[in-house]
Length: 219
Length: 219
Image 1 (cartoon, each protein chain N blue to C red):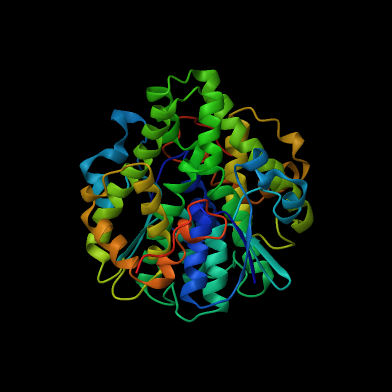
Image 2 (image 1 turned 120 degrees about the vertical axis):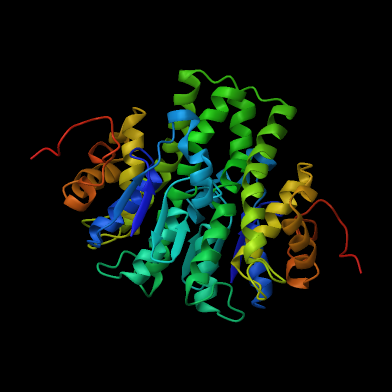
């Protein structure tokens, strides 16, 4: 199993959490999204993913891009522990909440979008931060409402699910962009509880081999 | 079955196609996204979807937002015809290609994003069009490459799939924003073939009850 990722890509971060939860050993192939104009645009990586985005998971003969598809694949092929309930209304609630993050918030805050706004819309650092925070805050405001009804110990009841896997990287981004997450008390509580689980903690950007921040996990 | 939608919402358009393909009768509840500052922000609709976005599908006691979740739900609960293959590598290829559209292209071109760029980034009509076309063209360029390998009569082989359901509304948007789709020959061919299927044709924005364009389907 090979994962092409980048330490700070939150879509890759999701996949790292799932791989850790499922205790699947994998080779981490770092693609530096900022060096040399972005190694994702190299000829070599273009052959791996014509979309020139991370993550990409390669498992034997199968190669999958799109983190939500990778997470579906992992959950169906390596079902222990199961992240998407197989039956009932809760199955669709888990998918919906995960997509509230992965479809409605994250794509707007992607690196390539930030680059477009700086290069073509003359965004300065403050405009950029306003943009990033706006979409996180719009999304978190609704999400916190929804999670208040679904959360138990974790985002949906007492089992770790796909929602948690998507939530933690998005909160990491929110904190990076100085969003005051105490406005979202359920999200805040979940973030700190989830990060006590080693599968989540060890998937964090700062602990990846390609992170420039060299800091061992705290005890 | 109730579908809250808007004639020109491409996420709602996807769901209409799926409902038509599966021959599921439904009540169409129009939510005007532009009138009165957007009826999706009304107290009444906020109670239906706290995200204040369409589509929302209500089926008996279950209410689902997020079009990809709705499409998963419909395919699992009303499996004829099946839009997502149940097994094999093709299952994940279908999901990945659908998400190339629904995650990487569409969220950037959503109405609320256009409104932000006009109101906060002083985008004029031309900046707006440049932005919309940029993300469609980046996405279509990679997608056309991928579809060249997967397409048969339809996007993936000989069966209509989730990819087709996502593709047609996205091409509709591309044409609306004057993207020259002849640059993407596989996408162009698929679009016109798919629109010969009545389930696709009748789901088109101009034929919805809330469309201001009053034009009966051509013979």
